[in-house]
Length: 104
Image (tube, rainbow, N blue to C red):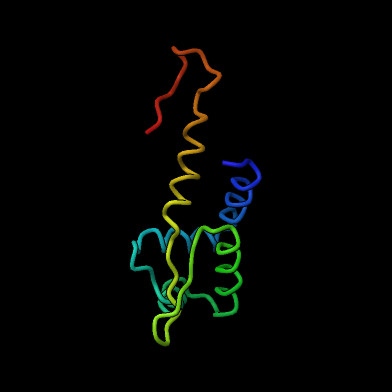
């Protein structure tokens, strides 16, 4: 993964409200959650939620789509997995074998 892309995704998650939002969507699974459900669970104003959703959408960590009158937010799981795998792939690359920590 491009280092700048990884950095922008990690930076987006570096805000506590966005991290709470992202964890909520990860836990929701493929069905995702409506904006109203997220707002209720996080207890934040709609304008604040919109701002934080936009930041996660810009780095492709989440998607939004219309379902009737609801706006549904979902985690982009392939992107999440790519970011995690990219971080794990670098684990102990330059360490001596006896000093390596096994990840995953």
